[in-house]
Amino acid sequence: MFKDKYLDMTKIITDNEILKLFEIVENHGGVIRFVGGAVRDALAGLKGFDLDLATDMTPDELVELCEEEDIKTIPIGIKFGTVGVVINNKVLEVTSLRKDIETDGRHAKVEFTTDWKEDASRRDLTINAVYADQKGNVFDYYNGIDDLEKGIVRFIGNPNLRIQEDYLRILRFFRFYSIFGKGEIDKKALAACRANLSGLMKISIERIRDEFFKILLTPHVINTVKIILDNDILGYILPQAQHFDCLENLINLVRNERLEESALRRLFALYLPDEKLAESFANRLKFSKKQKEMFLDWAHYNPELSEYTDEQKLSKLLYEYGREFCHHRFILKCAENGETPDSFHKVLENIDSMPIHEFPLKGRDLILVGIKDNRKIGQILKMLEHLWIESSFQMSKQDLLSQVHGNLRQAQ
Image (cartoon, rainbow, N blue to C red; front, side, top):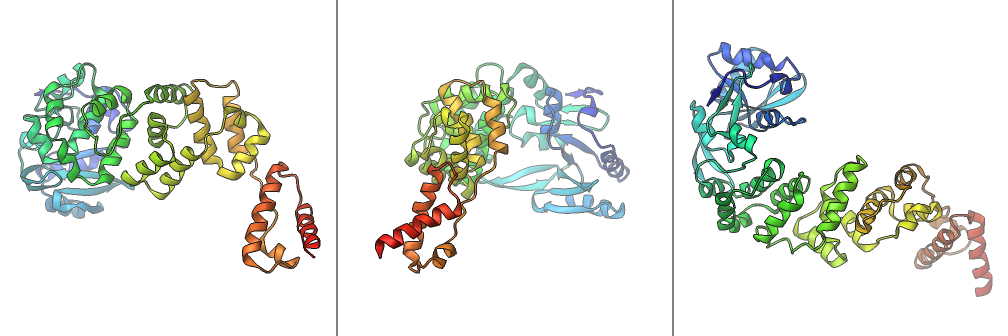
């Protein structure tokens, strides 16, 4: 389906230098078009998408003509047909039209082609197979525009074949359904996802985790995750969730207060895990070291709201756990309780601005007063730190050392 000047290209082209690339390719007898997310999201009225382009030129031809025009290129994935073209210090990914020769559920062996419909046929969903040129002409080979308008998310052609080309498409299907779906989920697509779910085990857990985190940040995540869990799509790594109400509270709170979203925080709200389950999640999903530490800390300690609204108690929390923990854990606590205190923004301001106290003693201070045993130094420092925290950080260095002097005299 061809639609003449159908798309307002100012929604896509924010840097007119990009048009130079279109001109160069066309002057060398080629064709280049925007494809996928940029076109789909512009049609749907969304913002903030990455630009992907497709061309009927081979990667070598594209690199050669860019060199002639003194345009820098980066070999992002020449083997798979993708060249990075640098325009105004930004990298645009330009992929040559391809057809699959062989697939194993993770990667595909491809050949280059000049057939735009054939290239479209190897894409996953109809809404992701819409192309547009720089003039706003739209090329829609599988009725993606109609599906987008109706909120239908479905695979191109045989859904089983599309999934078997890359099993991660199961999760991509759910992600796009959660963003663009308007009615019941496509039954053929869901049946194909269920029939091929064992193929997900061929995909690296890192790719699974990253795609699931993207799902967690989608608009209709609650309904979508329920469908995923009810159909045992990720049953080999995810248990049944019990706290959809907490997740809904969190989503509403973050939206209403215009806070930054966090997939990790949404996952925690969905399960409210104890330490054992939190560690299991971290290990199975291969969290980064920072993600794991944060997730385990949230599970380890769940302060009451009163500890955040009392500045003295908050000061202790900040010292023991840090600003990032307090920020996220406070938001999670509000979602868990289903209430937002009147002082909500004041608490967040305090978390960001209150000074974090510094323990005034070091090991060398104890050595100077006559304690030589390293094991005792650590034990005494820990005991003195506890006294200092309980004094609301009021005890001075000399106050703390006097405790040491007193204990030494008693020991003598």
